[in-house]
Length: 111
Ligand SMILES: [Zn+2]
Image (cartoon, rainbow, N blue to C red):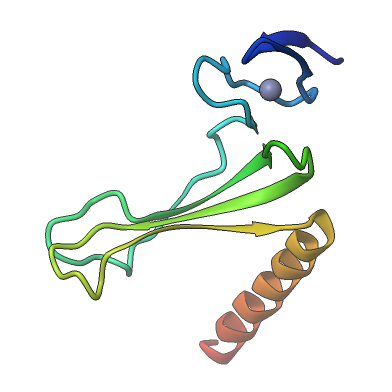
């Protein structure tokens, strides 16, 4: 389903997965439901260390990508991480397959 909204005085068409209200950001965002809380990346008193993948379509390119948000706050500047990386759907699938392969590898080695 495609939803049409008026953003910045121009007609924009949202993606079918967009949940953004576009009040200030013309980019389309998918739901925030895929967050992975990291249990070994703890520094200082931070409790919300995570990696979150989102469906994302930025403007003006209108290219639908996977946005990976890395979040590991820290009082130590060299440890602080709050960054995004963008992957194509194919790159995201490659990464997912490699993550599963490596996870299987370390589990097998631990048996
Ligand atoms: Zn949208």
